[in-house]
Image 1 (cartoon, one colour):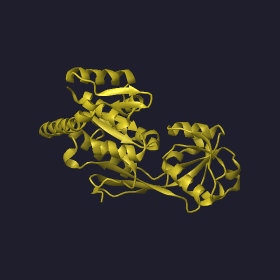
Image 2: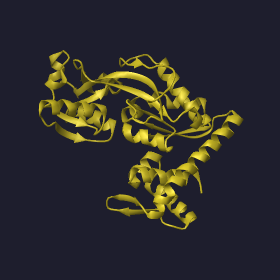
Image 3: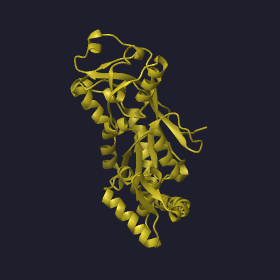
Image 4: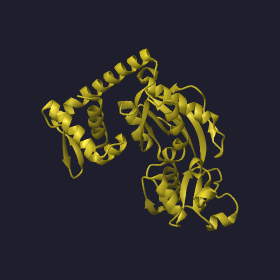
Length: 311
């Protein structure tokens, strides 16, 4: 059996749906199904059953799951040892990231990394911080860029930057015409475009709960670019990180600062240097150094240079 088969099985076991798992692995759903069928053929038994509610592990799948995790960890550790001997980073690196980071920061970093390390193939997946954290802990992700805090004590987190959350509003919106920052509590009754679970959405929900109102949701999506386009077309307003609002004038929406508004801290997370392949270490170093060298067009406060194990 192959690492691709094991990754496919572990990702489906984690996500519970083939479509979500396929996106996380950068595969088509048919490609993921072939990996699973091949693994089941190797083992001579069914590991998963599709139901209307998603993919469910069979009894054999439940028994095989911890062995698959240990097997993948052992294979990755062996690969890392060989890469240390060769001294040349190569192979696949799985990087999980927040939606906004994947859309608005990594396009400034990954192409340059690919030029410097042509034998390394990054595999990018986007998701919410809790799912990314679990992916790192279970070994389906080598690295993840997510918002703090990290809840698991067995992971290492290196803070990259801190930034404010601001309002993205349609061009010429009444809040823009005010010409001054507003408090989040003053705008909770606007129509909102949100990503469920995103830091901005959590801040909005907390403010609405404190004021005893229900947020008016014009649209829920799982795509950062969809938020931007919907705001540009006047569907509603959105609470987004300053990173997403870089070059907002050319993107077609206005930004409104918040008075004492919420902030988010973003960190690079992994299981420890001993678990990283040479390729993963190269990508980790490149991301940290690239962010440190960037100007601060969105008002970000850059993090430190060394990782710390979360407690």
